[in-house]
Image (cartoon, rainbow, N blue to C red; front, side, top):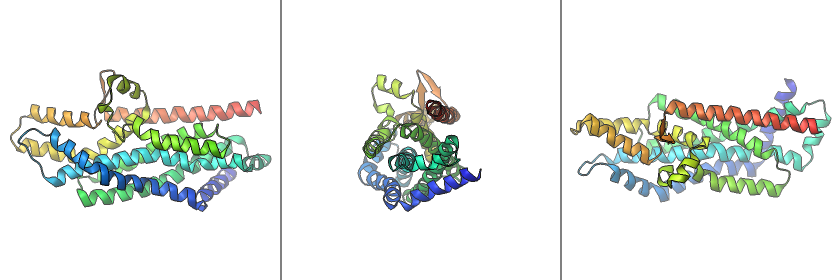
Length: 306
């Protein structure tokens, strides 16, 4: 255990000592927040406004709160994975500069070294993502705060869960990387592509039927929807109350809310079967467990070959 804790401390310290890696990890969520708020806020605002029944109006603060919740959920869902890939580059750097070989010359077991990379990456990712979450909460407080204390806790728990998923995924991918060029290529691909395939940049509902079915097999899709449901839960409850007070029947309220939720991927289905919010959490959790198992298997096979 002493070796494990020492390696975790070493890997964590290397991440924070590398100013370039730390800065790029911290600045990415902030840049996304600025870009979303600058270029996509009006588009999302118009989309929410048009989804309401004709002749029905709600406060600007409520719509901005809904827009803010969608933006925040997208940023955190993407950051938990992309930051994990960035902070997990310590594993690849140790291969490139020969530090991994030096560590394995010592009595440290390969399994302990691999576990230290995972835990250190998770700690680093959570540090950055919790910082990003704090910035997102400040943004929501400015544009429209409708989150309850429970909603905040659930968002933070989602951040932990998605960070574990992102760390497991990055550990598998990075275990095959051996050069600086491969590191850069994978980082670019993940940063550019993950937001689209998980439904963070564009709702999956807006894609074609075939692509929607294909993306329904990816756990990241449910991770984004899970985060979005919790980030928008307060605004959904407020909107439902406003519509009810306007005289709409319970059936109409349900239909309106379901339409809005489907349009922004808060309601997902797997080949016609609706996936509940608890089921989304289970899917991400089980996928994380499977990925961790694959990571352990990869290291075990490498040990046998060696």
